[in-house]
Length: 256
Image (cartoon, rainbow, N blue to C red; front, side, top):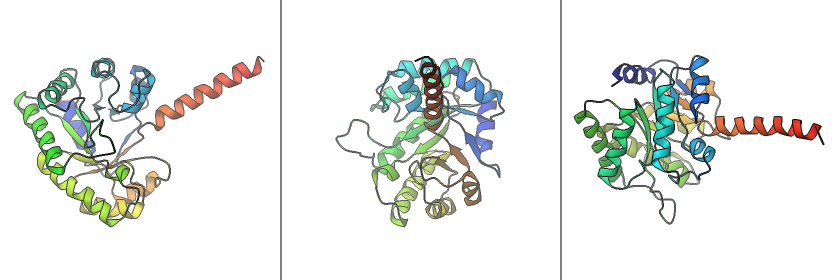
């Protein structure tokens, strides 16, 4: 058990400057992130799945996620957080078994989201059900003598096309409930309006995680707003692939 890395990881969310996470998808990218001085490593579910030929949304076998996460953990020494989407199981026993597999390989943090994968339309778990799922994880982790940082993701801003104070208040309702259940951070991908981000940060009982995307405020604006965690999500993977394709194009284009 690496409680030292857990303690480091949780402390990064209380610093004046935010934790910056340039998300990885394999050993090489994780080692590169560590080598340039990053404080922690975080995976991207989209990047890992796509790199192995799967669609995002838990289409990849959980065993593949464990294998790559284990390889990353074995080849790095800084705190590792893994994006597990909804946990790869709708049943409590399956979810907790998956959590234990992550703990046993040294993972100290997870992204855990509240959407329902496989629903006919974009649907979220009820606040009560998702809070219960978070609490079950927390109780289970404690019973096993481990510690785990849950970054509770809400997909409200993906589900709703218009973002306003009402939408943010819906997110805050979940934020307060997830906090009481044991989550340590609230992750709100899709929220890009700096005024709404400030409103959320000012009222959130948890550190706020913003994911950079098209239309996002600058990092300096997010710092000014009080955001404590900034992640790149799939951007790092997409940019890497674009660079590879560009270089390949130059090689093959020059030989035509």
